[in-house]
Image 1 (cartoon, rainbow, N blue to C red):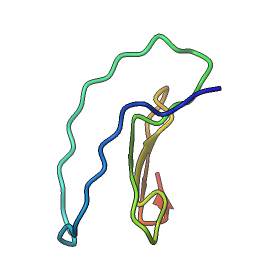
Image 2 (image 1 turned 90 degrees about the horizontal axis):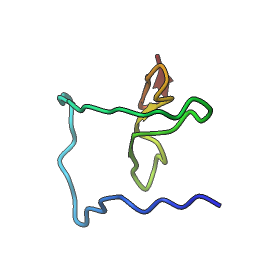
Image 3 (image 1 turned 45 degrees about the horizontal axis):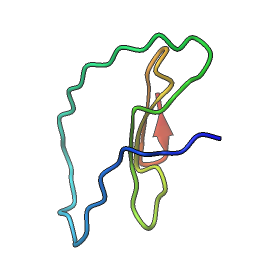
Length: 66
């Protein structure tokens, strides 16, 4: 049973973003799981911004994935 233990919860309203920059460094020796190093959620959208599959890094923004 895995639990999410590291997260940030922001209260109040944030401005609507039209641009952003994201920079991070990550190292994992996990070869079996395809984890999610970053997820940004809104009340209206569970995964508004998502970096997933840390074996090949996929990007999901506003309902579109690469």
